[in-house]
Image (cartoon, rainbow, N blue to C red; front, side):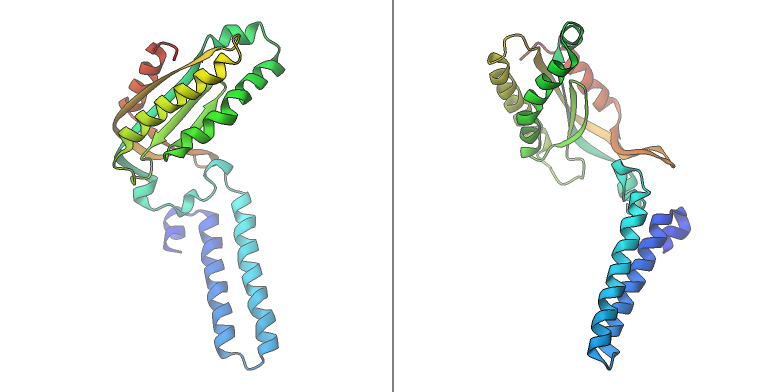
Length: 217
């Protein structure tokens, strides 16, 4: 409720009300004289609390649906991360001469295997835009070995992507870049929606430039 008074986010008020309903449900169990009535009332209060949160959550922007609940240090703060970028060299020319359905099949052929691999060592797939993918390590500050994780993941990613490409000679091939350093991690976007928890800083820019200069494979 204190967060609601400070941020005026409807979702926070609904969560506060839900907690009050859950507390009331506990009191019903403790003090009720008729167990049948209290059993039904307990479940009804629980149901109302969860439904209220579910309805309120649906009004939030889907990418950061519970962002009003974030602590201030989660909303914004500097931390050390490793960022990996990868994209397909020659993707534009491939798309120009290839039907969209085949382009989509090619991307899905890659990502079906590569996305789980990117997440296997703790990477957070921040976004996929067409052929480009951005992965963050240590986004939540719980990976002191994030640089090693990012390097291992990039090498495994390239090995798997090369293996896939060898089975499809006409497909474009991936290049990747990794950089580690300090970033500002926090919510980016408007109050009415389109919010995303991202990382900002020269560390990210340099990772993207390294990726654009990297040779295929």
